[in-house]
Amino acid sequence: MSTLTPAAAPSLPTPKSKGLVGGRWSRFALRRTGRLLVSLWVLITLSFLMIHLVPGDPVRAALGMTAPPELVVAKRHALGLDDPLLTQYLHYLVNLLRGDLGESISTQLPVSETIAQRLPATASLAVLAFVVAILVSVPLGVVVAVATRRSRRRRTELTFAGASVVLGSIPDFLVGVALVCVFAVNLPWFPVAGRAGASSYVLPALALAIGPAAVLARIVRVEMLSVLETDYIRTARAKRLPALRIHLRHALPNAVTATLTLAGMMLASMIAGTVLVENVFAWPGLGSTIVQSIVTKDYPVVQGTVLVYGVGVLVINTLVDVALAVLDPRSTIGDL
Image 1 (cartoon, rainbow, N blue to C red):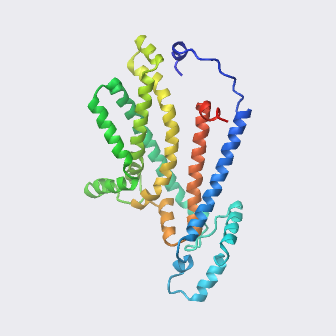
Image 2 (cartoon, rainbow, N blue to C red):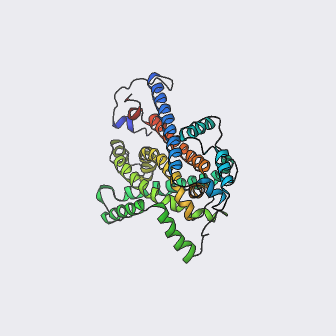
Image 3 (cartoon, one colour):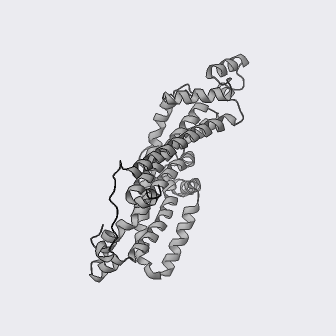
């Protein structure tokens, strides 16, 4: 934090922190852990019910419509699909507690093995898109905030606002289709589909990053404009410090704190967004696997991949809550 802050705004004495094991922090940790467990149970239950309530026979889908009826009956009995739905649900919960995600009806492979093969492709794509979004949005938001401060360069401000709203509102898969048409078909600079080499990451990562980058750039600009009008920034200008030092050393750290918290939430949405983007680019990740499994009604694979997606989103949101509580305890701890 800048050394200019105490001189500009004397603060009231604050109570001493009780530490991470203190009373309010303990209640906060218990509350977040309880919320995480309940959310996880709801996710498991809903994913189980939704896939089982969809019309269709997974055994017929796996064996083919011409399979002998006795083979279909035997297969359904072996998989436990002729048991009552509640019995199947309880068996699924027990197996989950044992760490067993089941076996694919179509490929006969363990679901955990399928997930282990596909997860690196999805994780690397989501992380790359997140890094691109941060690297683009933070500098862009800062530059536009400095350039348009106090309603200067009105045309630039309107252009930035309009472009960020449009780009932030277009669905990821439509952005992906447009990128394929321009940069893979008309201009054959990048592969149309698949995961083969660094160049294959460019278009899928851009499809995932463009929308969040536009939204984050707007937030960075707003936060930066607010910080630039604070007293300690005026004091820094009065001391005739270089503009670059004021913006990067004194204003930027305070402006991006809230932005990074929101960016963590956007990482969760990026992971969910890979489901559609992976299918646009035939990306061999969890997103394409879950769509193929829904088509063939491969219950264990659908449930396992949905669980992985859900756990990833829930864990990221929990970490964001913890980071926000550490950065600004009054926003989360103070209300307990």
